[in-house]
Length: 162
Image 1 (tube, rainbow, N blue to C red):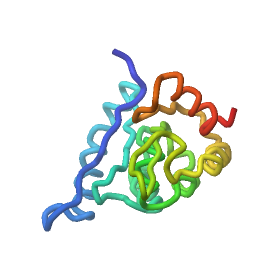
Image 2: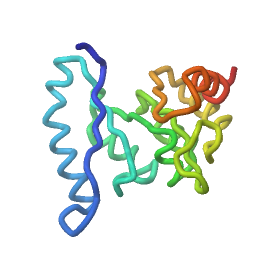
Image 3: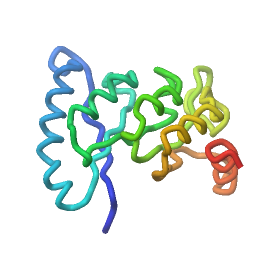
Image 4: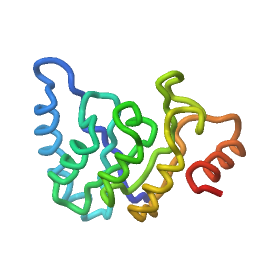
């Protein structure tokens, strides 16, 4: 089928047996076990953070990625997912070149996940931050807008700045 990466959510924090440290240690061990196969196949393991209680600060997520010390492990950063915890541009700058791919989504305190441009993401600051880290990877729209044409126009305006 081809492909350049696989997206992985490393676990969910919850309860006495699933603390942040448990998820951290177990997922580090399991991901490290697949790195040789990923390297052999030329497939990067890209970690995504979601609202699962794990790595909910950009510094923690950066440190988690760095723990692998491997070019085969990176970040699949979801712009809207983590807006709840810190501004997207802050995540982008702190993750830097660790970010390999992006999910393009918006989120707002008042309206949750929403049409691009209608949430709390400051797209001008996101564009600047992406330029600063020289991001040149794939960006995928996750969510829905009015139409395919609407999504295309929103991405051109908000993410590219056309």
